[in-house]
Length: 231
Image (cartoon, rainbow, N blue to C red):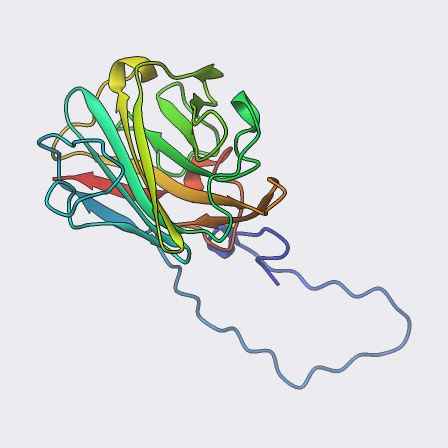
């Protein structure tokens, strides 16, 4: 299939059939089926008036919109000083991540890749300097890492809790630690959200993604991101 071959059908301009064999071949019919491409998912984000990081994602504080994944929900909002990320994730073996730094994806974690430049080409295939890719470790030392700058972010506040079979978390990340300008109201930015779930032995077993659930690669290819509109 096209997915198995990692081919984007929207980029196909010409299709050739080539046969190398002796003898004859007969075709009764070839049908060209019109293809309507599915565009990137879109999310409308309300700016925050301040989040109390207590690990409970209280509905009164967070915007109604959520990034819905098969394993739970992730919420993202921001103000002029902080980027806020929270979530509820179903996990039968919670808070297991024994990795450090750039390897925290290999266990329980949340990843968010996004642009801070509203004018960046959404079809670009490489990261720009204004693109960020952060990981929030849900286990171990609960660090927050940014892969583009290869740094552990400082000044982060994070709380987490467990209720029944789900884990809850909230992270308050200074824009200054990202060396980035905050998102501006009325603009659109690229974004992808993913949840890494590890097995009981700690290694990542599965990754759930928002915009491209059936296709990996958002960590190197921003054209696979969805769209975030700041309201």
